[in-house]
Amino acid sequence: MARNVEFDEQVAVSKAMDVFWRKGYNGTTMRDLTEAMGINSSSLYNTIGDKHELFIRSIKHYTETRMKEALKQLEPIKSPIKAIEKFIQSSVYVITNEPNSCLAIKTTFEVAATDEQVQKIIKADNDFTYNLLNGLVEKAIQKGEITVSQDAAMLTDYIINHFSGWHEFFIIHKDKNRIKNMATFLIKQINQ
Amino acid sequence: MARNVEFDEQVAVSKAMDVFWRKGYNGTTMRDLTEAMGINSSSLYNTIGDKHELFIRSIKHYTETRMKEALKQLEPIKSPIKAIEKFIQSSVYVITNEPNSCLAIKTTFEVAATDEQVQKIIKADNDFTYNLLNGLVEKAIQKGEITVSQDAAMLTDYIINHFSGWHEFFIIHKDKNRIKNMATFLIKQINQ
DNA sequence: AAATATCTGAAACAAGTGTTTCAAAATTTA
DNA sequence: TAAATTTTGAAACACTTGTTTCAGATATTT
Image (cartoon, rainbow over all chains, first blue to last red; front, side):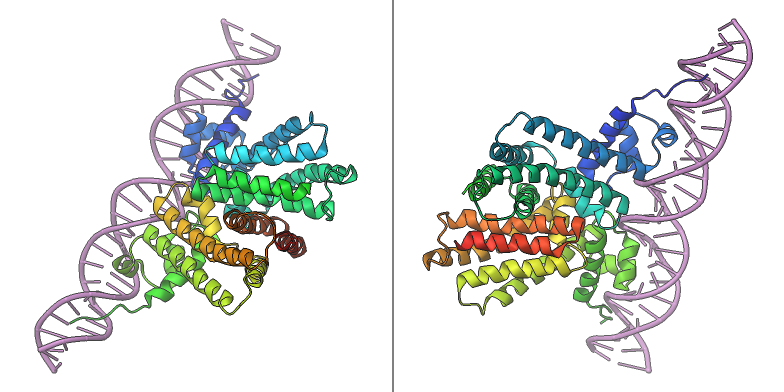
């Protein structure tokens, strides 16, 4: 019996996410957000909620999108070790080509330590990556594609652990090659 | 012919640093700062300057203190490889025992990408760590303590690169053991 | 001790913050 | 088409922000 919401909530959240991604949670104002989303704050508060809720939806959107992309990218690859290598290489590509560094990592360092709700989402995202990669590492060990004498759990942690540093490194040095060299060495270490 | 500043500027900056360390640049207000420093904002603006300048001094204080500590800790160690191991192990200790994660890393992800002045200080800090560790790696290779066939430059990047991930990991999982295991593996990788 | 120069404290500043209000517009259903 | 109900836009809200003001307190130098 009444009109519907005019804007697409998914699209709006995606636009909000872009702002948070660039400016961080505390660096973003509600006016930044409503301007980028193209909606009035009254509509925003009537539908999604306040700034914090919008941030929660933004980082959920970010992590969910990333999870889907990872699955889609790795699914067609038959060899576990090749999938692991692809995962590492495409991380390097993203790190050295996207305009902002990973929203999840930025959020971890800015607010995860003091915001439980955020912490949970970030942890879920990390657990997803862990499980995805751990499955591949286990298979690779079984198949004898990884011969280094280490348990899968530790190797999975060890591989994932590189990405944060590469992001940090790229912000500071903006040097693709040194990151590529680290990635090459990491892959060699696993492969041996 | 007149009175002197009542407060110790070094002590005041150190107290400001603590606040920035906990809350980040954008999450910290001038009232947070003046309260923690125990001085009035007029005194602050008369001596140090505005919020940004205070932040600059805070991160300089942080990085300089850290540099001195690193030098002091590694100086007495004769064996290069032992010094490298000590460097890694004490990083693990700091990461898993300090209440906040590294101010330099937090700052890198929060503001370094958009603040040139900050970026420079952070880069100088990273270059210092790089040079310190690179010297050790080169000596360790010469002495045959490191036999892995990689150039010192890449190995230095590779070692340093782990710290950021460990910080991130500890915020999310608060698990010391998994970090220790990664550190042990890293040391083993270098040593072979 | 007096003159001098500077620092300090409290208050005030204008602009910016996240959020709410509400009349008018809009779209749905009957 | 008319009634009903919700969304929207602009303005306003109360509070916080970074910063400045300035009278009076304070310490130095002569």
